[in-house]
Length: 344
Ligand code: AHR
Image 1 (cartoon, rainbow, N blue to C red):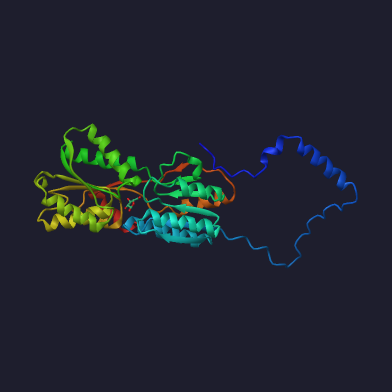
Image 2 (cartoon, rainbow, N blue to C red):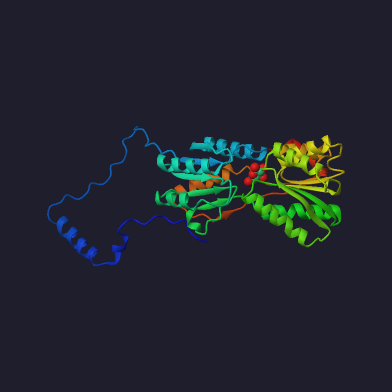
């Protein structure tokens, strides 16, 4: 496990040279030649106002507001900052990497204490991360990771194991279908960590189940609108009649697809089995209504973990490079009982 690297003071390399010995000797000489010894600090006068603690300032670049999951994630971060009295400079990138990079540069210019962000895609972050490192500002990645080779460019990553989520979705479907399924896949944002890893995890399971095949696959960009559009196109394609199952990389796309399936005169959850990822309330409602079969939880409520990390960094503590998030898998039979206590 690597530690977050703090930039070295210029000239630190002199520490081993004889120059320091000579300087030290001079200081001893000067102090013995009439310089007043420093006065001990006086205790604060009784009744005086306590010295105010400096407010921590965090710059956070959010991906956007593409899904119910994202809305819950934003709420968790904003409310936790408020609860702890941390000043949060929040910026919404509307799913565009260039907006995120501009926000990160503006956080450097504003001299925030810590920068946190959920990178929309995995690649292309090194130059801005190098600049943040040069400015001596620690970085916390939340939700999605980056593919930077040098992991000293960030202090820690707090987020789910998306490959494992893909495994869980695949294993659920393999069990539910006895290993036989013709699958339509709604992929997340191209180049994003959850889209890459959830596909990989799911395909690992297919490799062990030759009766399960992906026959249609396209991105729905993690949104309900695109999920519906793409599912409509799948259902008009020559392979439409072969589709027996849908794997959606998030609940919002699955919920859009459910509408498309119903409009095509089919029964979602029966004619086409549906498994998706996130565990938002809308998915639990769809399971309770018999229209969605399974949701693999991806927990967005990571505000408390983020600000624990921020406070640890302010206290100059070293953090693990990755902290996971606790998650489960839910089926239709659990939906009604779970709904009243779902927090997002
Ligand atoms: O990165 C997490 C994913 O991003 C969630 O599964 C999805 O709903 C969101 O948009």
